Length: 458
Picture (cartoon, one colour):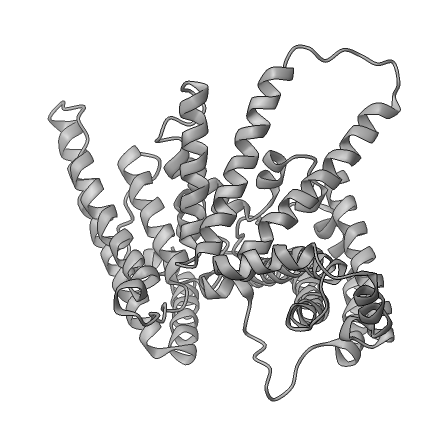
């Protein structure tokens, strides 16, 4: 590899370390520590596997792997749950939840023989410390990223165009759609209105967390493209899903596939009895909820999704092989649309404890949904739910715009953004329009922290 390529990698690595040190100096210490740990353990695992193969042993160092994984798991657990013992919440270092999962996944991949242990410390440090994905994902996979860092990195004109368009779309999602709707949600919940206004608030929160997180993912993936690195796709129009199972094939893909590959499948996955499969599903989704933090609402959110999937699997098992052609071509479309509506409502119900955090707040929110009267709703509605009406017009156009993009993405094999980016004038026009709208309806100011994303706190 030429010297220029190594210099470029060192620049990317230095940029990541400066990013961590600038935002939170202690976070750089943890990043470097976990990186060094993962690198050293990977070298040991790779060497042990090679020795066993040369000696003709088929037995792999399973106990060694378990110990190596246990240490970062304990560390992450202490940061997330140590406050239950001390009474004070621990400040989680920036990005710890994400690059720790990346290191654990890497060690398992080395153990399985899916990737070779990385010898070059610069490449491995770039794997864990590439700053666009460090704070809130996507959760990178060693097999994909290490191979990119090992090969010649090239930034094409198409990469620049696609990256810029992704960033423009992601910024609008976050600072116009997500942040304005978040104000509405918090205002309705903090107000005195009950009944329908609280139901509206929770439906809006489903959009808030999607636009917030999908916006960040687009920005991160776009930044990666500008630097010649292709990060994993993280969202595929999740609210177009017609079942909860399909929803999880589309939502936070990098994390859901991580839990599938490194927890669900090792537990036996779907290759076991139906009862065991149900237990595995509940375990995985409860752990997924626990990964978000110590608040019971996160656990309940994960458990609810686990229960949704258990019921879906059982119903699919009952109905398998019994479907008959109806002769009505509209039935599949109607059935799918009904599935989308039901799925959105189920997912929105599960977001209630996620938003509330604590069980007593969750109970209060559900209780408030079934109290109050229509007068509360009309008062909140006449007040624009706390936003100016012109802002609502912008939000309405924005929601429809992104819905159309989601549909076009799905119909074009999720390549619509890349195809559109080939027309540079589209980026130019959208950039001007979105920047103007951002000035009119964006949420910012001296008291606003523009770096705060919902999933950045996990």
